[in-house]
Image (cartoon, rainbow, N blue to C red):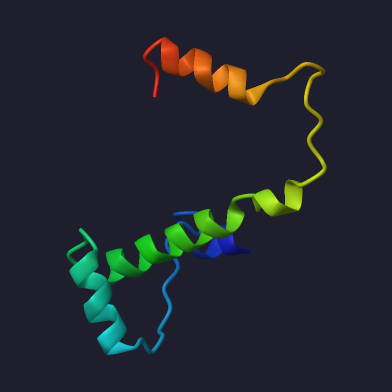
Length: 84
């Protein structure tokens, strides 16, 4: 149904919302964006990216390392070879 209503396949969705003016002004100061719309879109993108990442604590006990894996040896080797 959405494809029938908008030509851009819902890439842009018009909506009217009341925003906290002080919060928007602060966001505009921190953001490279020039408009409120772009600032809100950036904030939404960052919100989704942040919440899409796996929580490393949730992975505890779920990763099995190879026998003989020695992370300290690997770090020393990288450090000795000039890697950071």
